Image (cartoon, rainbow, N blue to C red; front, top):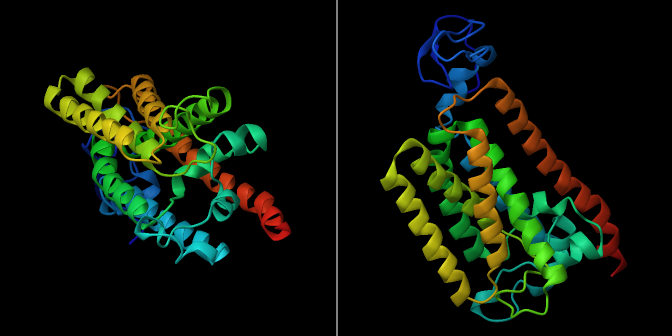
Length: 287
């Protein structure tokens, strides 16, 4: 699938115009190396988001299964809602975020890793469905690299806000008090919604922005009804996604440096999971 193209034309990832695969610069938008070293066509065949939604789905599923294997003690315990749910200990090892890991144990990097973890089959199912819907739409509006940046930054701001509220405002009612431990892709999902809302306002696509805002409001209200929902992570994710989208500006074309930053975001997230495992496994074994 990733066969390199050495001649002919490809579609520029930034502006969608035809360019030579070996052109140093796109004549339409100015993007450098629009042929992406001959792999632009191969990446485009992966989809509008260059395969990010599929990669997220696979990564979340793998880590979910690993979380069950690490500590299978509660897989079949409890009721229907807790069936096949990982324990807090296994999620801690893999990189759960929240006030306790971030401020109590100094595991600050978990604001990156927590969005790849989930607390149960329904949790991961709904989040994966939202990712597969919103990631291509955001990539179409901003470009796949900037979509990855938005997703990563929104997840980090969401879990950081939840951890801050959990640390300093823990006396508030549960649905307002932040989280001691928190996981899930919903924080960056709200970030994608925030980015689409900004896109609608910036580009004059009111229908797109209103639809995304409507989804965010409904999902936000849903969080106040259902127990165990991290509302501060949702709010922080939406604000982070909207803010980073303003900085990236959908009127400007995606550049090569955006691609570099996107790969750096993915690498930082992978390192965050690795750091969590390396520092968390000894604690799991001690118990």
